[in-house]
Amino acid sequence: MEKIYYEIDENIYRRFDQKNDMFCRYLWDKDLKTYQNNFADDMLKNIKENNEGYTHFDYAFSKASWTVYNRFHNNLFSYTTSPFESEDN
Image (tube, rainbow, N blue to C red; front, side):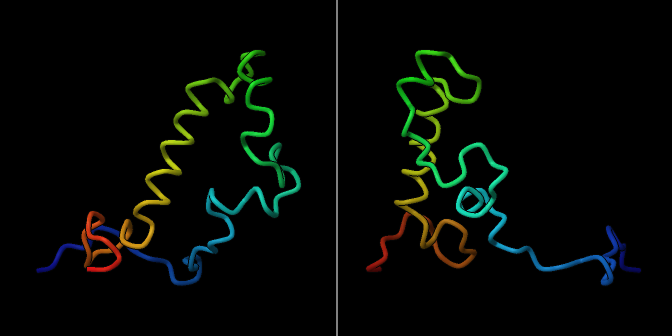
């Protein structure tokens, strides 16, 4: 007998709207503090004032995250391709 680990309620389950991912939200959500702002616009001011969420570490982490995304975005979420393969392979 096959075990059922979870049930999907087809009345509730919906495809994820990609506009809600963290890379796009700042473009449309007017309630977001960083709405249509470049994260780095006030970088030095925020670091100097030690604003929560905008420390030197936060900016470094953000830059590292975007570097990974920019380098591997074509294959990063693929189940059939290694993220370390170049686009030319």
